[in-house]
Image 1 (cartoon, rainbow, N blue to C red):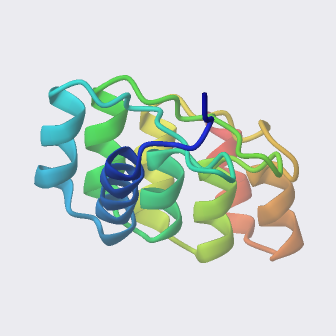
Image 2 (cartoon, rainbow, N blue to C red; image 1 turned 30 degrees about the horizontal axis):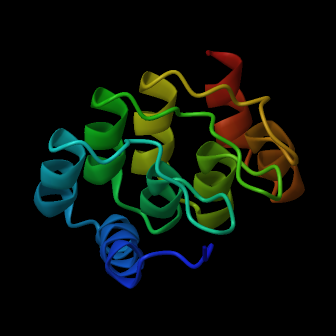
Length: 130
């Protein structure tokens, strides 16, 4: 018996992760609505919401959160989608994640730590409101 993944499954997963990276919300949520887990993760532990957040797709982030994605899901390096959005300066994504329940103190480094590193005082103030 082999432990090699089915090439068709790998191809489909690759396509789904690419939809998240590219912000192809309608196509992505069609897969999620059909049964793909909203918290599907790649080989680095990056969930769909992390990929959408890091690439600046607030609408995709909102749609995934509405379908049960975990706003604080950490990847294999301990990073959260919110910290990634802070690093990239994606204000609309940050707001979507906060509305979706993201914790600014979760992860390593946390979104708060990341905002401090980059002297984003406006974000520190925003996080203080949550």
